[in-house]
Length: 64
Image (cartoon, rainbow, N blue to C red):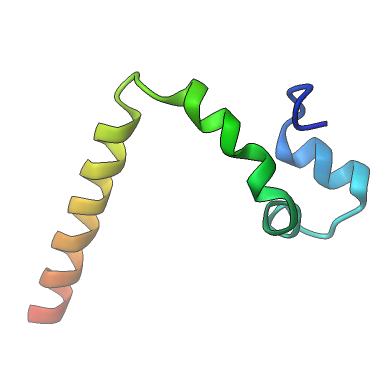
């Protein structure tokens, strides 16, 4: 199903998993190939920016 392009929620329903997280925990390695096709388009930059913002929030929270 992953190779044919089905999304996680469709796979979850088909396998009757309670949560999509259960599907991802069991089959996450099958989605790794998809990461290569997502690359570019600023994804890495957005992830880095989100991590940076998260770190700033944590430091601010620790100060308060």
